[in-house]
Length: 182
Image (cartoon, rainbow, N blue to C red; front, side):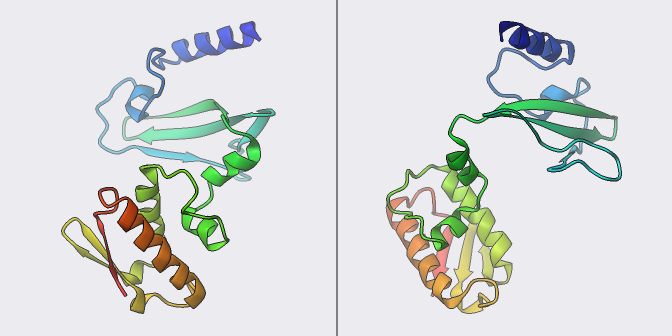
C-alpha cells in the first residue's frame, strides 16, 4: 500500500501537479496558464467512438476518472483517483439533485444544511423551471404561476414552496438572491 501511494505521488509530481495544497484547480493542470477558455470533458462509460475510458471502480471506496482538458494551446488527458469519504449509499446522495431528494420525501428540515445548498438549489431551479424565473439585478424571482405541471407537478410545487420558504426563513443570507412570487 505504501508503494502504491509513493508511486501516485511520484506520478503526480512528474505530471506537474502541485503536491502542497489539498485541492487543485484547472490552472494547476496546464503549465502555460495563458488560456482564455478551458474545456473539460469526461465519460461515465467507455466512449464507443474514441475509446476514452469511463469511470472505473478500483477498490471499494475508490474510483478512477479520466478527463480531457483542452485549451487553445493544448490538450491533456488526466486520470484521477477519487476516494469517497462516506459509504457508497450516502455518497450517491451527493450526486442526486437536492430538490428531487426532497420531492421524494427526504426531510429538508432535519438534514445538515450546507452553504452549498444555496448554489445547488439555484442551479436546480434554473434547470427545472427556467420559464418561471425572472432576474432583477442579483435577485432571482420564482413565479409559481409560470411553472408547467409537466415539469414540476402541482403536488411537488406545493412541496417546493415549503422548501424554499423554509430556507429563506432559516438561512436568509444564503438565500437573499431568491424571491418567491406565489
